[in-house]
Image (cartoon, rainbow, N blue to C red; front, top):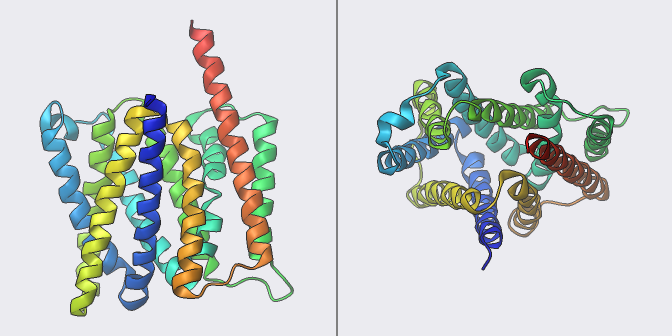
Length: 294
């Protein structure tokens, strides 16, 4: 099987697992404080990251070594906050609705890459970004009563995920992938440990089983994604994230009784189309740069 195809299979497995993880997050986040749930999840994730660092070439010393400590630490904390906000949104807004808005992340990345990465974004990509955000408005379907304020949490989660993506690109210019992965887990776990214990509650015995499942899906999903990146480039893997939207919608409808309204489905289709176009244009721009270097 061609390496690219192997990478695609790993990507499908990763985003399938992430969809299951989000379904579990909604259950736990509805019953317990989201920051508490995220803290426990991050403790397991940090252990997983440290084990991978110990087994990597150069060991943990090389994984910890970074040219941009505050950048790496900041992106790790940003992702932790983003996950807390996402779980809040899963529990209040719904899985499908939340992921419909999170689908705008590639558009946010493209927009933020201009001021933060000094990248050039042409009028075609700016047009796609504008169309994509119009799709978000369709999802929201604002009327004379405005929109639900809780959606601000969902927007904040989407923005932070986009910011995390841009900062990850910035860090990759000077640091190795294992270093970035190490700082994805450990600073977030540290930050959550400073706050999370204040939200500690006693979990029901069977929910500890769900918590274990959440930790396992988090670790296995990230492992599958790492393997996907070993066989396929990030730009080719990124579109598979929209497959996760389909799966979480199925989970939301079948297990939690969520309703997919026409404006949400239509708006999500617009956002996905704009996102895929933006990713394609980024691939074309990167390809031109590679050819210019030859």
